[in-house]
Picture: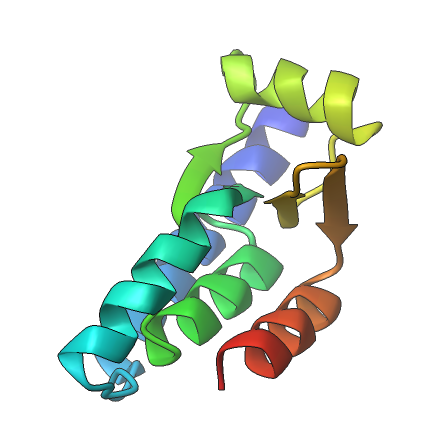
Length: 123
């Protein structure tokens, strides 16, 4: 039964991901110099995510529309990033945005909170 549920979940997630790719829209356009500053700023950000998770898809879609080339890490079973998220972030929950600062790392969970943070910082 667990395998059946997993197959349905992955198939549905894959369909949602495909639908997102087809209907994404346009990226935010910036002047080249502004985009370079954004690309430098996002080097301190990492998104921990599952490919087929609807909330992760929502977050990736927002990143695309904001034209933010944020590093992505899959936290699927067996991934070393899953262990990293559990040990350093405190729990395996995705999406999670890791914000690296000189003082400490901030682990921001919840897709709506991540999107709100990105919009406030990069719009």
